[in-house]
Image (tube, rainbow, N blue to C red):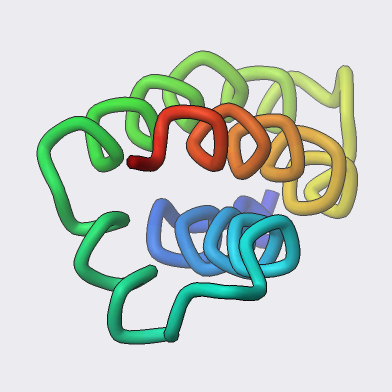
Length: 81
C-alpha cells in the first residue's frame, strides 16, 4: 500500500493528458484552468471515486495514473473554453 498515488500525483498526470489534447495552449494557461474551481472539483471527484480501487487492489496505481487520468484530462479538455 505504499504505492498509493497522492492527489498531487493524480493532478499532474491529468495535466499531462490535458496538455497533450490541447497543444495550442501554453503551460501557464493549462495551469490556470486546472487551478480553477471547475477543474479542481472534477479532478478531486475523480481521484476520490477511483483511489479506493487502488487501495482494495482492483486496479494498480499505474492504471490509476494512466487510464483514469486520461479520462479526466479528456473530460477537462472538452470543458475548456
